[in-house]
Image 1: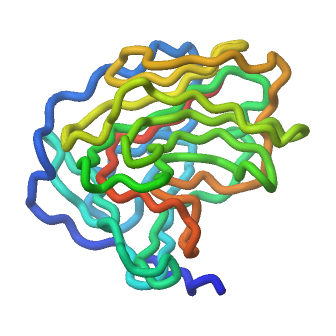
Image 2: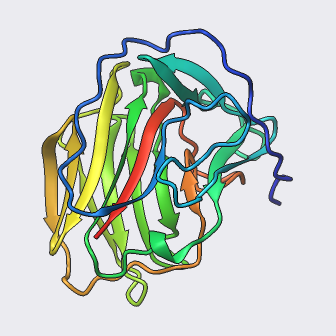
Length: 242
């Protein structure tokens, strides 16, 4: 049974979540910025700084919440720590905005990413960073952290053929330091970047199309038990299309 979703945003705290070097520049993608979140606002509302109005709401279950932590000259959001209990009773939380067509790239190029802080002891079988759609019930684009090794991966799933196309980074991001992670689909190439360096790429069909009516979701795919909860801190989440 799904937990009741409760919106909880905890006030800012002045702690530093590990070293905070300046994030590397995101890949040079000639697309339009469709969503951007820096998490620096003091109010409870998480505003889309692209100006397109994709405001985020916090959905949670079993006491799940996010908290503000210091990152460089601004703030980031820390998600629940790993939970060893049954998934059905662990804290769950995600940030979501309503579905919107301008976050559906179709067959166009798309890039998306975030600054990520994850310690080696915070990894799990899979943690979702940012996504729109689900791999088995719609179409999808997604950035996640895979497995105990903590390697980022990028996913695309066509809305007509639910076959998962995935590229996984050759190096880990789970080392207790901030990293800029990005996914970029350019024509028939899907690549994963870590701190501005390509760490893996695969070929995808030119006609692969991602179009769905699912929400944009950050930090997990939802607030239910099987939500692939992210357990570190996130900052500067962005999406570009075109």
